[in-house]
Image (tube, rainbow, N blue to C red; front, side, top):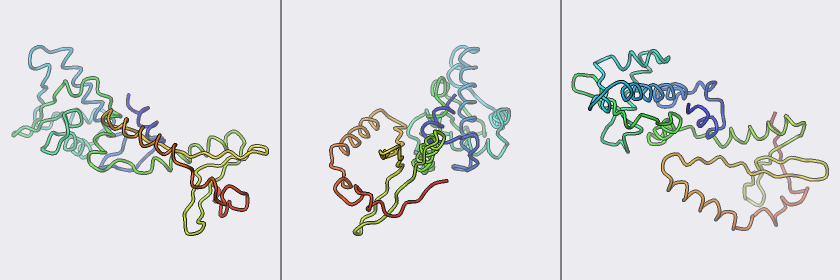
Length: 230
């Protein structure tokens, strides 16, 4: 759960991505938040009273249980630190853990129960300023590879004309026609209001005249330097 969301939004195979974001691989972030969701569900199903909503972990116990989902001790400690409530936390959904004076933790079950680990991961990374920044490039490559798999020969234009930079993401010759694709991968991670702002900005761009429509890029001689992707 959550892996499909991250793979779609970021446009890449997160299980093969070995990069670390705030000290953890994306798959390790997923495992951590998925484990918290499981612990919350476990408590809500088996306990009564306040113990259902606030799960107490003795010192070292939470890190040990995270080890059962593939996080080594150092990674588990890093995840717990990032997922713990602090004065800059935006809400409990990203940081549902509360550190106790004795080194143990409270888990707020209501914040983790049924939470999507993928959305929570990306939300937390964005809040920390550590989210992947290359999703646009990765998505362009995925679109390029899609056409290659169909036996077509896509290419990209990246050139400068009259002091202005021009980049067309993917162009696909097909018979006597040329299809031009502008690839955008935008994800509204946190609140619905972000999605509304993004929608307004996107539709506003569509209303603006395309600056390349009356430039030399509209003619074969204006294609300039083309870089093919292999």
